[in-house]
Length: 304
Image (cartoon, rainbow, N blue to C red; front, side, top):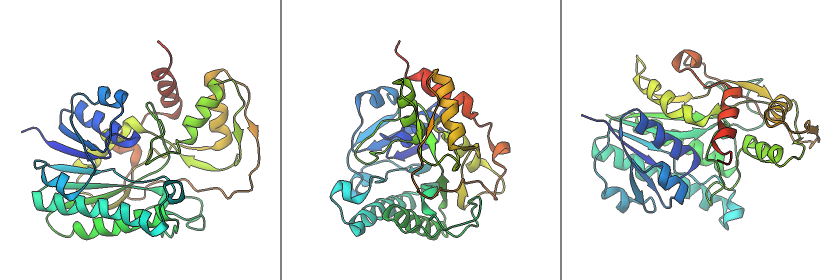
C-alpha cells in the first residue's frame, strides 16, 4: 500500500520541496496551505492540493495519513504582521497542537515537526550547536519553536512516533518571499545581487553557517525515518556543509561572474553553525555539495 503523507505549509519554500521529494519517492502526498501561487501549483500538480487555512475543522475533513510533516509556521517578525509577541507565539503553537491532535486521533504512524536552528540564542553553545546544546533563544520565533519541540516530545510518549527536526540555513530553487516568510535566505539575496551586477556586501565575513540544499531535505528525512534503531526526539538535519560568509559570497560571485564581494562590518554578533551528535549526516544521505547546489539554484531560474 502506498504510504500517504500530509505536508502542512506546503505552499512555502521548505514545504513545497518536501512535497516534491516525497512524490518523487512514490508516496501519495496531500499538500495543505492557505494559498498556492501559480508556479508552485504547477510544480505540485501530482499532489492533492488543499487550499485552506490550517484549522481543526480543515484537518477533520482530511483522510488518514501515515506521516504528517508539519511545516506551517509564521517566521515573519510579529511587528511586520501587526501582531504582538504573544499573539505570534500562540498562532504558531496552536497550529502545531491542532496537527498533533489530528495525527494522534487519526492513527498516523509518524509526526515530524519542522523546527529550526533559530531556537538558539547568540549566547548558546561554543563553536557549534549540537542537539545537546541548551537552546535559550528568546525572540518570539525561537520561543514558538522551543514550545513546539516540547509539545512534540510529549506527543511521542504514546503510540505516535514524533520527531522534531531542526533545520539550519537553507537555499535552493523556487525561493521567494510570501506573507509568512518575507525574508528570503542570504544565499537567495546574494545570488540576486550578483546577477544584477552589484557587489555582495558581507556584514559578518567570519560568521560560519551550515548550508543545506532544500531539495535534499525530503530524501534525508525519509532516510532518518527508516533509520534503525528508530529515531525520536530532536535531530539536527543538516548537510553540515559549513562555510564562512566571505567564502560563500566569493563562491556566488565567481559562479555568476560578478564583481568581488565587499566587507561591510555591521557590528552584529555572528551565529554558530549546526551539526548533529546523534547521527552521522554524511552517512545518512549523500548531500548535494554547496558548489553543485548553488549551480543548480542558478540554472533552475535562468531565463529559457
